[in-house]
Image 1: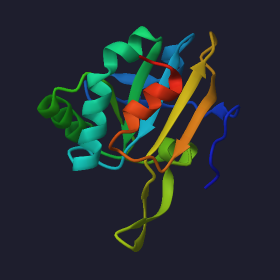
Image 2: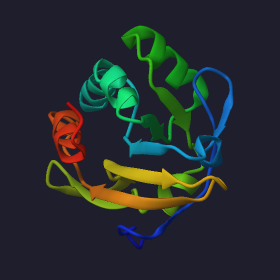
Image 3: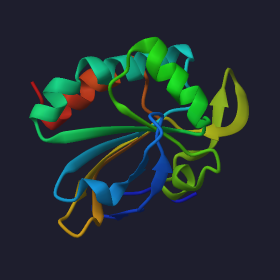
Length: 159
């Protein structure tokens, strides 16, 4: 699976959200969007990352960014996760993995010394132009859940 690089076109997507709506990348025309991919709702690392994004949501929004979290989970699981953890960020379901694969966030990785195929925890910043087309301005693969949001905020100059 090819990895996206800075300057590449961002693959467009339309996915169901935990709140029952449908969200497209083009909905964010004229905005900057943090798109992050995580393996599974309600697991320790994924919960840490989602809670950290929620805790930083106001500062991220004030800096002109929106946050979209994408996993292969079903909408119902995401809805329960969002409610249980009081998450305010938008969570999207990609059970067919089409968006995960388009962003290079699905592939082979090591888990406890064993090679498996699954979600590669990844984060992208997408600059969406007025037509709804996006360009990758940050591409980070195999990020750590713990401390990732704080590092991303520093990298993007978000206080």
